[in-house]
Image 1 (cartoon, rainbow, N blue to C red):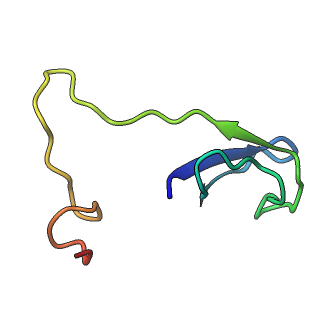
Image 2 (cartoon, rainbow, N blue to C red):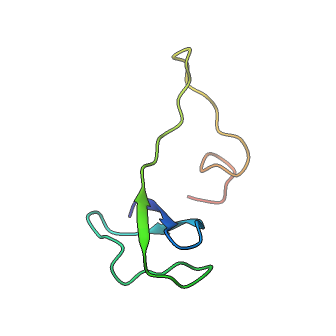
Length: 68
């Protein structure tokens, strides 16, 4: 499942949630103020400007992160 980012229209709090592709904000509420008026945010991916691949640092999903 992809990770989506939302911003609360009431308090401005930003948070992430795992959702199925195509699901919207119906049934979701802000974890900070409990408001239901949420706006899906556009996310970008990290890239290198020199065209070379980068190595993930600790905490990433690479070797040693605990995922198999």
